[in-house]
Amino acid sequence: MSTHPTATPPAALQWSADNCSIARSLEIVGERWTFLVLRELFQGVRRFDDLRVRTSISRQLLSERLKMLVERGLVRREPYRDEGRRQRHEYRLTETGLELYPILVALMAWGDAHLTGAEGPSMVLEHRDCGEAVHLEMRCAAGHVLTPREVGGRPGPGARRRAG
Image (tube, rainbow, N blue to C red; front, side):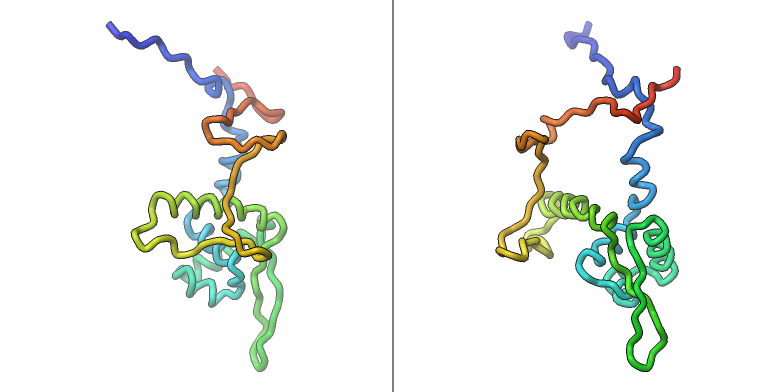
């Protein structure tokens, strides 16, 4: 005989996950190479050959990722021409693409906390104006700093009841 009370199923089970913003976002950026390309673009690496060197990605795969990022509106192509050479394109983040930066910063912070060796992180982020370290935090609209255990979800306007 168990001494534990029967667990109440999570309320989330009443709702469909088919309309999930996380799932839709991962269709675009949920692949390792895409995030590595974005990492480089955030660091100011904009040219195809430089992106290839920094990510060690194949030409074909890099071309596919950049094409998809352009089609989805996260990156734009800008023409440039080095003297005596044909026109080429640089890749620059759009405002939509720039909005992904906190996600990369959060991944980096998690990796620094849990995966960095004894030598420490390979990069630290700082505020360009004052030089202080940058960190992310969650806040509610009232300004309270939150931990993950203090945040709950509830159905939003796009939520759909689960069938059956």
